[in-house]
Length: 252
Image 1 (tube, rainbow, N blue to C red):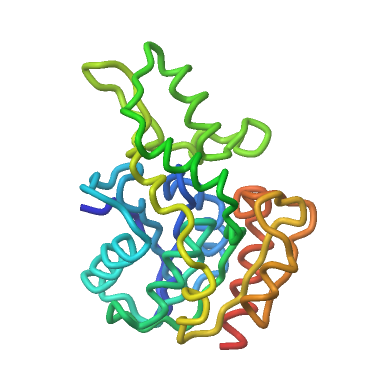
Image 2: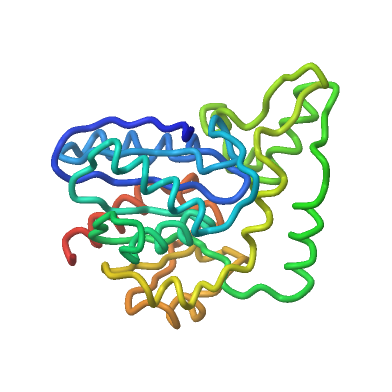
């Protein structure tokens, strides 16, 4: 089961995909901005192993894309545009390949980490192999969730942006993220970007340490910086993200 929420009206649906460790709650401000503009539907989903969505036996970009595609079929989305952050950009590009039977009209990828040095891959593998960690207080769990998702207090001030990030169980408080989702790290971004059958616009916060504008430009004809933002540009400047989406739709 994939947890999702949706709203709006119109023949176009914007599919909002969060990054590794986060939940669909990071799109609250973008969703509100889309509501204000009208004429668009939006759907924000918790990717498998995150938030309110079920845990799986294993994880890959293709597996997450297949799950998402099934949800989009069930919801009978019309003209679909995908806005994906970090891992969400990978999943969006996979769905846009057409391999999963969903017609995508454009992809806006935000801050995808493209280069994976051996040390980063090893760190991701170690995180994926760790057992679930339980915390005695919600404050400890929230602090860990903020570190894993990158949603520091100075970036994500509203609690709405943190929804479904932790869960209370008999063993204590834990993150809702399945640690094994870290196994998706290091997927081949170049082949995913090349496989997309729809227009692709890649962007990053100008202060994002995860990826450079030059790296983005190697994989898309359209690549740009979002001034004043970091890795979580969709939280820091939702208006700029919506403006880029509108640019993508107009050019598609």
